[in-house]
Image (cartoon, one colour):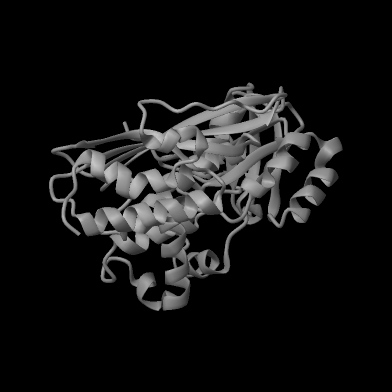
Length: 331
């Protein structure tokens, strides 16, 4: 596939992904009409090659990850996807075949998650591949789940499992000679962990349970320890968390047994894209039942209490772990 002009790229690869509000991507703007009785929820994430993904990753997977990390934000707000805007900064070495595969992956996920393309912009950059996606979602009026709403005594839950993606990234970064545990982990477990880094799983099915029962929620993108501190800190709260109660996959458990020092990676490494939420005790059973009905595993990891200190993570003996860095940070 030869290189096309910007207009040809839009018409050929991206216009087929557009929803009705995108006007076939033939205009400079989209037009959407939120359903009566609903609020619009908007979120934006940027991804840069070499920072958020590997430049050599499959182009369809890069596209899917870019959309999914944004959908994860909507999931944590209890929102239903409405559509998205795409900003695409292409490096000088892009090819038509690469972009075709990218558009294919993006279109597949846009269809699967009911989140059509509404518009965007494509530019050339002298730097690495850069992606910017803005997602729009809908919640019933006044029902968006804020990050700031946790209250003392709320029970703290996370969806899915924690640490898989962070270990998966370690698997891709570290040579076997530098990390002997990698050589004996087994390919099945290693493949699972690498895939969890490559393709997040936005927990959109949890939105009804969050809307009905959660007082606060956010997605875990920068590490459980740091993100829990962010959410509780906004409400003047803290917590004591037993590491034994943090949900891990079989693959993560296997890696942790081989290298106990990985516990810090699990708690602080990020890229989980699971939902972290606070639920009043009176709603706990109903929340768990609603999550189960939606097919999403949720685990209670502790409860909030007044305090200004960062949440404390305790080992099996009750001793606090000394975490050198509590979350990923760009700066």
